[in-house]
Length: 390
Image 1 (cartoon, rainbow, N blue to C red):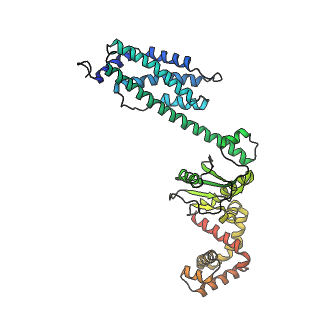
Image 2: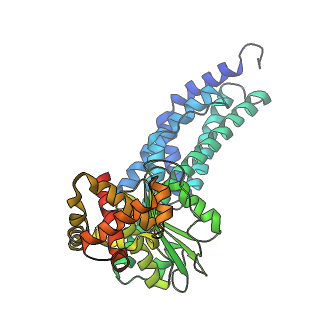
Image 3: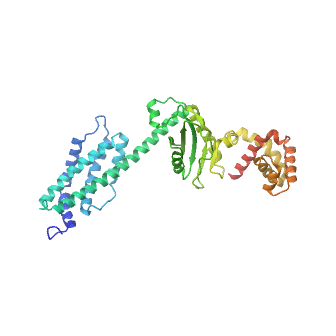
């Protein structure tokens, strides 16, 4: 209790009732104070922004009255109109410092009305009441400005992402790019080694975060065609494929190009990752390296090549009827194990002579020794595996 008859909550309620009766006057005074003390940039002529400013003032005044009535510990959700105006400000180029100064100016104007009503209600000399209401207003300002800053920064990040995506698209297509645009990327391209990555699915953000943390270097990351495209920039090329692991999400697909230097290398590693991504989407393994799948990726991009390999190798092998699955599986394992018949036999749990017999049969069917067509047969068998998974 303060004056022996009223609690702080009751006094807050009394002050707010008096303020609500003057709400229109308060809104006009705050609008005038803001425009006078923190005017718009001279270049800004945006009717939507002007209308949004007035809507935000009305909403924030109502929010402030609720905050005073409920006390310093209340942290209700910031009005939508205020959040929308913060995002709008980011889009039209109003700085965050300008927004913050306007909130401070509005806070001071609102505080003067509160002080007037404290005096009219007879509590101006009550230190406990004055301190309590001042603390309530300070908590309100802190909560409001923090929320507005988050909205503003989020919108700026979104705008920056779109801007970077546009610049990256121009670079990839070979269009001329201004030096100021390159600076906006905050990423060194010329003279650096780059490794490109394309990914989709849950967990992409974690992979990019780990890329940055792993090397402590610049990482350019944009969204293109609903996929995340990223580049790691280094002064020396990466020497190992083992620097990246997935987060375990079954829907995550990642493709990685080979290291390339300068602008040409930056483009090429991206195109390699894009080619490998077609393989990643079809494989149970969620990370695919272009260096390991370049021929398969090329076949997936070239229908004539894919059909030719099928016709040349798979069609003859399929003449074995029910035995063609065993024959193809034997060849697949034989190639993966570097054409070692003993290892293949152990892997398939069959005899070594069985493996050798199947290999000779395959060579007879395709009319060539495996040694002379190993790479093409390997791609044909892998294409068949991918088709059977689709």
